[in-house]
Structures are given as structure tokens and as C-alpha cells.
Image 1 (spheres, one colour):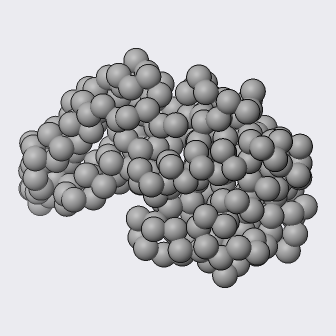
Image 2 (image 1 turned 180 degrees about the horizontal axis):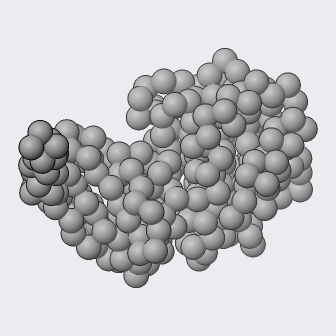
Length: 153
Length: 110
């Protein structure tokens, strides 16, 4: 699945304000809420679901990348957000390095294959070091969206 | 004569590598498929060993078993068969550790 099929364009951030794991997750969920994907009352619950998943093992996979995710009943299809932290966020990553690129995935409850196909789309983009470098250097959400749409096209 | 002798070390080397290579087919039994937590556990186990590790899904090219980004390319839902192959030092030990990742029941992610 291509990233452009599930990343919510309006929920892209090129410059996260938060500098700490929980705050970053809240900020990304807030971006999805503002884009119309969650009601306020659901946001806290989604944040909790993601943090609970992070407690099991960090989704910081190394090389400055994290893929926080959770299943939640409030979505009827898989949605995602992308955020860049130029300063870096401590994320308890596998290589202990701060995270600069975050790809968040929220899946419906019983759609495991959709989640796995989304991961495949994320991996295709993030394995490309040039792509990751360009994401990190993007000046605004539009540039990030353009990169996502043009990758592998 | 010289030409005939040259391939010998290569052949011997190849045989040694083949001797040290072990492959095992595993089936994904987790209803969530081979998802990020078991992938992370697999990569962590793979990186404890000096041997090369690949995972192959039928009909696809082998992927690097020491890289979670590579494993993310597999899209292995429940019931998928994967071939785990290890090549090099401590291969027997490694295959045991890697196959056990697929035998472990991961709690459902919420």
C-alpha cells in the first residue's frame, strides 16, 4: 500500500513543537483530530492506546525513525500521520538515537492485513535513505506530501 | 593447469558456506500476522549472531533478517509460510533462536 493512500495530508507536520515522546504522540493525534479524524473525547483514548503499545517495546526502529501505532475503534480505515522533529525526540529506540521521522498508524480493530500492507508501504519509502534525508530537510507539510506522493511513482 | 586449480578454493569456500547454511520453513500462526513486535524480537535475536540471516516469502526475493525495515516488506499475514535461512558461524544456534520467535505467542496489541 502506498503511503499516500493512508497518510492524512492535513495531519503532516514538518516541525514538531513537542520534544518528548508522549507530547509528540499527543501532537500527532491532535493533528489527526484537527483534520477531522477523531472527536476530542476519542483523542485521549487513542494516545493511551499508542503509549500502551510503546510500553511493550519501543517502535523506534533506529536510524532516527519511529512508527508508533495502535488499533482503535474510532477509525473505520487505516489512517496515518507523518511528523518531522528537526531537534530529535528521545524514543528509547533500538540504537538509542533520537527520532527525527515519525510515521503514525491507527488501524481499525480487525484488519491485520491492512496494517501489514501499510508497513510494507512505509518500509519501501524509509529504506530509501535519500527519501528520509529529504523528509528531514522539508521546509513545510506540502513538501513532505509531495515527497510521499512522488516516491516510487 | 593453473586455470584448473584456480576454481578450487572458491568451490571449497562455497561448500563450506553451504555446509554452514541452515534453512527452516515456519508458518505465521499469530492472528495479527508477522507484525512489528515479533519482527523486532526477530531482528534482536538475529543481531545476537555473527551469521547472515534472510527471510523469504514464497515467490519473493529474500530479505535481510537483521533489518526491521526489510522484514516490514514481507506482509506475512496469519498462515503465511516463510523460509528462515542462516549462513555462517553459529548457524545452528541462530536458527533455533529465530524459529522460536514464531513459536512464541505475542499478546494481542491493543
